[in-house]
Length: 547
Image (tube, rainbow, N blue to C red):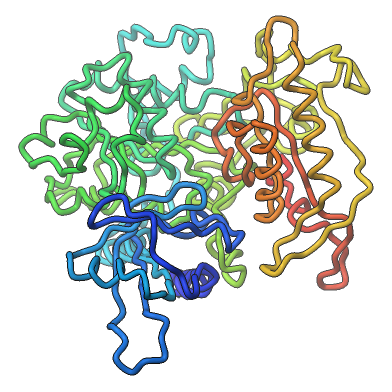
């Protein structure tokens, strides 16, 4: 029911992207053209995805208007959507310069359909030991002759512990959790574990999944450096554009020239590591692998995925035919329940789907709960060495969320902004800037604050002319976070006018799992709100967003 509500909400949101009385121009070829959507003041990439459908209805009062024409969306770039037609007769109609069209968009709901399928599989299988694990006591650790790929992990007791427990399958059939705040090396630990599995178990196969393509690409790039590339398969969705694939990854990606393909089963069987997003992994079901083909299912960004999302790669493995234990694969999930959770567009069901599997397991299931101030290492490892942030920036979150356990091991880069002339406190690399502005609403109900936009631009200009010790700030160093679409558009417009087109502007979700030397947060809000007689400050009331 929750998935159907999300679909209904998404369909309503898609109506905001309707274009009226539009003249088709900008042909790229006979069968494709580009639609400019800048007039809507909404970035199409917020909702529209490659693979969705554009519907063209002739805007005319004549009774003999042409039938609606459907076409496929193949690419989205800023305010432009690239459309590919299905046959030449459509092109003849749309190329008529005298005609105008009303254009609407329909989602294919591919991720939701994948979730529905995974839930159907779950209803037919015994997944209780995975979904609601129980504590077991018969864990025996084997000794391995380990030559560490990443020598830094050899100096980190918790990371070494996680790798060894994964090799020993101590949690199976329950998931093994790697938990830690940003900058503690969760992805590095997963990559080391994958490399060691390949070394210690040459016959075992691994399925690696992430919520985003960015995270999947990052893991692929790290693995390529240490594992023969012919053993790695980076599987993209058919909508992925060849030119957007990192050059390092292309040799192991599912492309022939510039077209996505799906490898034959006999070729897939030679790949030890398959890497994809959660939703794309469902394509492996058609291959009918034996049900214990994958010995490990490893999922990064698990704290940002919904529970149905997490079930998709499990549906690929299904359950073992001859064993009563259900899954034979060891599931490994990495994330942080104190960071931003799944993004749920439908507020009505946010309390139901807004909690990730990782967070539920840690809060509700005995094997993952802290006992006497410690976690059970057979089921969970908490990483506590932070390599990314200055100690003072994490002081509050360390106290509130991490039991004051974090150890700060960052290098010189975390100290580079100290003593900067703009800092009120030269030992604390953060500025709280008071802005005397007023929030405003546009026609689309999105909120913006002009005074804050100007303040952001001032700091960007100062930063771009700043040299921090040995590091000069570049556009790629800066990230600007704001929760409202209209505020993002205002900031991007002015940055482009200042020739700062490579500075990323987006929501908190945009920067999940990414690193920037400088983050500027524009909250926009200038007033309090009331809900159930309690005052709040909108999105900033969520401690996960603030952290």
